Image (cartoon, rainbow, N blue to C red; front, side, top):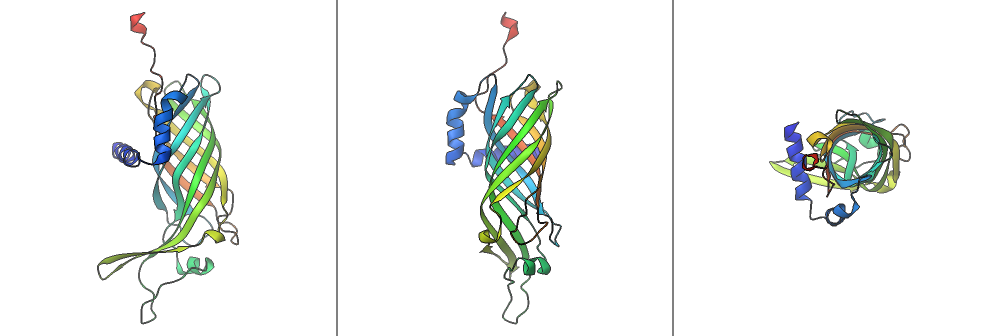
Length: 240
């Protein structure tokens, strides 16, 4: 777990130059209040698509910002946008490629080139979750999640004579642009309930990924790290 947290922290720092993240850093101190927490969310997810012959997962990094809006003392509304986020599936089979009308690469002898095919989709993802915070600093959350797909492709990766090759075949027009489903998660507030949080989520899509293939649903496991920007510090009662 410590290794994953370190990786997520480095990932957030490495992408801090992106414009969306700069806006978050600049405005975070202004947006945080007693009833609102605002900050960065980063993580890694393991994703697959049902309804295909392959059952393999692919993994991706994601990054965005979040709002934790207090409704009652222990109940809040958790939303935001993952501005860099991907879903997809790995190790597509020949049957999958045929179903997706994808190009299968062959050598000069007409034989299939050895390699792996995967479907990758880039989304803007918006969770809309109710979060209940327990007194022991754990929390549970549940609610809908929506995604807007802006880019997708089938990627072929191969090692040919010791040289890595990667070819992308874009197929955005074959996919539904909107994805929606349900998310449930658990997590823990570090530093006695103030500051960073770590959590896990599971997402199951309710919308077909492909326009002409029923039963193809996104699903993904998330490991996430939330870092509030400029959150108010707890009062120091020792000075009273």
